[in-house]
Each structure stands twice: as C-alpha cells, then as structure tokens.
Image 1 (cartoon, one colour):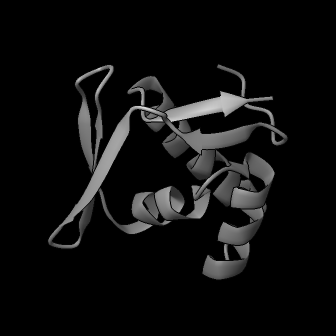
Image 2: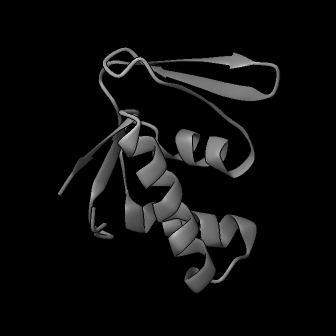
Length: 93
C-alpha cells in the first residue's frame, strides 16, 4: 500500500486492547491476530487515539523524540503498515 501523509488512521472497529505488564496487547476479532506493543509502537497506538493523519503522527514523533523527518517517516509508516496488515488499523483518505 502506498501511504499518503494526508491519510487518516484509526483503530480498527473490531479491535480489543488491554495492558499486560508494560505492553499494550491489541487483538483483532476479525482476523484473530494479536500483537503486543511496547516502546515506539505503543506510542504510535496511543497517538492515533480516535484518528490522526500520518502527517500529524510523523510531526508529533519528530518533535517528541527529536528525530529528523527522514528517519521518522519510514519508521512510522512501517509500523502503521504492520498494524494495518494485521487488521488492527483502518485507513481513510
């Protein structure tokens, strides 16, 4: 999938989440897949909230972690694609 910075990313509608130790555990009812998120991936999950553009996620990550856009963008997009391919995220736009 080609990602656009203007794309709005949301948690999937059939996704359950909980916290176990220091990880956010996300489960997709539709796909039956689950994943444990920690560190940057947990930050991304929380930052998505009720919906966020890829551009906003990249901007916030660059500011918060003091990382250049050239490094941050592929990392954020890669994490989003991994979650999308597992049915954890929905993308619009």
